[in-house]
Length: 126
Image 1 (cartoon, rainbow, N blue to C red):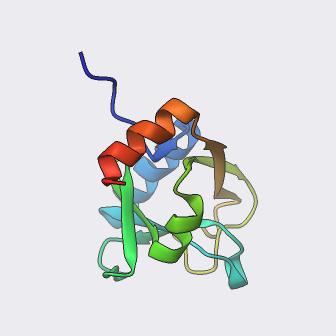
Image 2 (cartoon, rainbow, N blue to C red):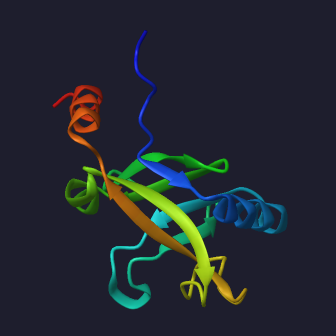
């Protein structure tokens, strides 16, 4: 029996609830992990089609039906961590759909264990 596939990105129940709310309001949504600058390191939520991804982006997975991306250069730095998307009180990123709701998405993380890292390396072809 093969081990369960590892998820590079997961979401808390609160995040899944907010994704569902935003999807009802805006239609399908997607995420791009901010690399810093104006909105810090917040995961940014967009209506599908409002943010274009390309060859410089990596798809980490899906949470609540929403694809989750980050830049390839940022992925190289974070490849050994699992992102856990949560919701906390505060203001969302200026261009993120969670803005103005008095709650915002927040990225938490945990480092994969050695066995998980080995499994990811096999999947990634390293």
